[in-house]
Amino acid sequence: QVHLVESGGGLVQAGGSLRLSCAASGRTFSGYAMAWFRQAPGKEREVVAAVSRSGGHTYYADSVKGRFTISRDAAKNAVDLQMNSLKPEDTAVYYCAAREDWSIGFQRSEYAYWGQGTQVTVSS
Image (cartoon, rainbow, N blue to C red; front, side):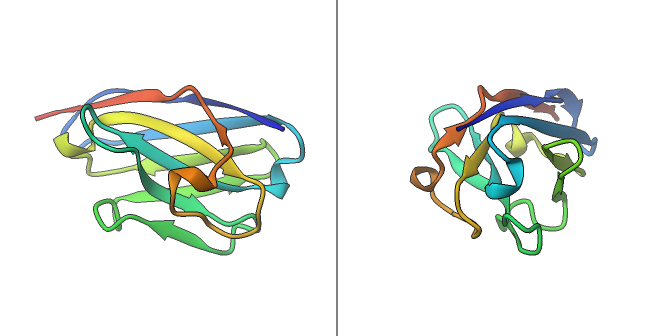
């Protein structure tokens, strides 16, 4: 089992940047594919970005492609999400998730482990 803790959320103006970090503890971090999801009020939780167990494959939702970058740091047992050119529609609670598989998953149901979430608010 792996325990996930997110940090780095906050309030930022449109056009600004934030960097979210997800610290993992427990079982070997390298055994998991990782992802960032987000959930806005009244909406379904959606995948934003994901990275394979090796780090060699990444996925980005069309809405964030070119603005967000996911990366994993094996030395820190962490996965980060760099968010640039933020828009008000990026406002949501962001969740880190882990799946015990080498490949990327795209659905909420494919991830067994979740952090508690961190709020990101982008003002216009």
